[in-house]
Amino acid sequence: MTLWAAICAAAVAAVHALTSGVGPRLGSYRTGLLTLAVFLLAAMYSARKRSLWLSVRWLRAAARLPRAIARRMVTADRLETWRTIHITLGISALLPFWWHVNAGPATPLERLIFVLVFLVVGSGLCGTLIHDLMPPAMRKRPDYEVRLEDVETAYHQIYIEAEETILGHSEQLVRLYLAEVRPLLIGSQPPARLFFATLAGRDPAAAACGHARRAAAGLSGDRQLFERLIDLAATKIRLELNRFNLRLSAAWLVFHIALVAIFGVAVVFHIAGALYYVGLP
Image (cartoon, rainbow, N blue to C red; front, top):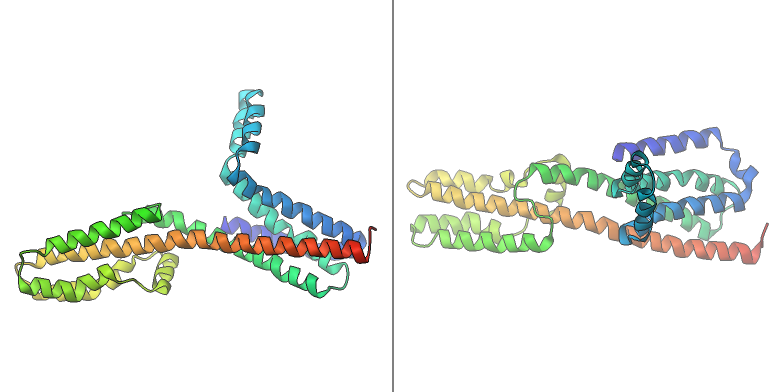
């Protein structure tokens, strides 16, 4: 989807270069209404995710049609299809918005809307990139959870297992566990390290547990048990990355929706001001 978004953005830039004079010819009202219409169509994706009202009626209509047509209609109603349309319309709305900006001088409110539009589109592109990265991460890394509460439960289970494992063993093992492994179990990896591990597709546990694995060389009889404790710490660190990715995939959406809400309020004031001071064309 990131590649598709880049193609759409390039297409918008190319079409605008060929139609730079369209904005002044259409005027502020037509280009503004066209921009608003495209953005509203793009916002239908959010409504589709939160309500099945449209989907139910769409599928009822598909049930009355021939099987081949109905199958295509069912495919068209998938969230993946809606997401593709949402991204396409969201970027395509930049074209009439560009015409609208070129149609006349900008007020301070219109400059704010200009900034908000690119923040909304930019946050959407960041979300597209995040969701393109997340599925490969979930397939490659073991013990991946899909709910934050499951991650917290796994943390607790790993810690209890590690604490019970060292009971009754040598003082050297316990000392190494307290110095090397327990800090990994009760501590947290820096968010920046987890973020770059996601971008690069790396396992952060390898670097974080490196010192503990080197310390295991000094053990003799308990070395295999200590390696088991390090493996538990590595699993915990992978779960940290799991939790970071889950939070990241949700946090960008909150930011995106907040920007959309602010943009909507600014557009309402913009339209009201245009109608009050200029009137209908």
